Length: 95
Image (cartoon, rainbow, N blue to C red; front, top):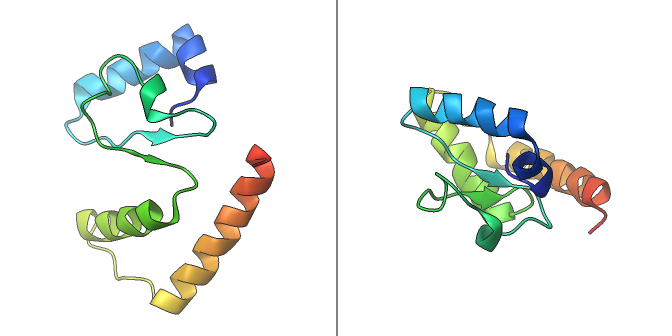
């Protein structure tokens, strides 16, 4: 999860560096008002998405189900839970 607070924290940067070295799979998730133009370091060439992007959350769900061989959540249930999540995120981000 990338935010200005993340980039302002030396400890977070060190932790992420360690994770980045040990994995070949990572997806940056941006926390608004942080934008793709704010991404620096090892992440600029990596695809990612904003934490409140409905369509990207749908893609992320599919990716997780495939990667971890999970049974897909029924579409109606997923949309209900996703929308609850997005409402909570909007309130937390005050956007």
